[in-house]
Image (cartoon, rainbow, N blue to C red; front, side, top):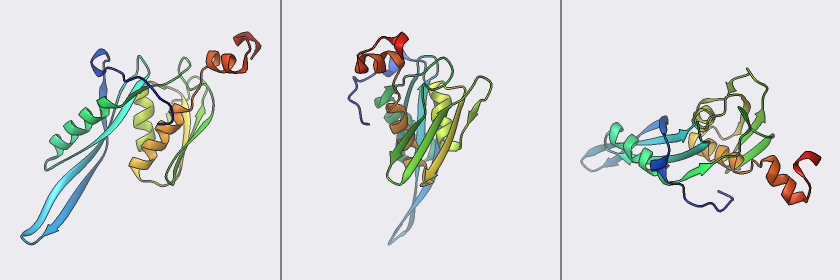
Length: 169
C-alpha cells in the first residue's frame, strides 16, 4: 500500500468474505506427491467502505480459506467512495498487472472481471467500469486493485491540498 494508515479493527465491521481463487499445489517428494491448497480471499463491509485481502495455505481447502480470511482481516483499508461509485478515474499497478477503475452513472452495475469484481462488491461500489490490463494472475490483479483504491481522493481532501474551498472545485 502506498499510504500509511492506522490499523482497522476487524471486529467492529460486518465483514463478508469472498473466495477469489483456490490453487492446488503439488510438491513432488521421494515418497510421491504432496498436495496442498492455496486460497486467495477478499473480505469487506459494503456499508462502511472497508476491504482487505489475504491468502492462506493448508492441506485442505476449508482450512486454507479460513487462514485466508484471518490474513485478510489483518490488512483492512478504508476506501474513499461517493454515494454508489468511485470519485474519479484511477489506474492501479502492481508488478505487470494494471487495473483501470472508472466511475459510472447510476444503474450501470459492477462491470468487472473475477478478481476485481470481488473487491468492488466487497467494498460496496455499486456502479463502476473496470479493465484489467497486463497480468491475469489473480494475486497481482487484486494488489493492483488495492493500489488503485488507495489512490482515490475525496473532494474535501483535494480542496485542502490545493488550498481552496470545496465549492470552488
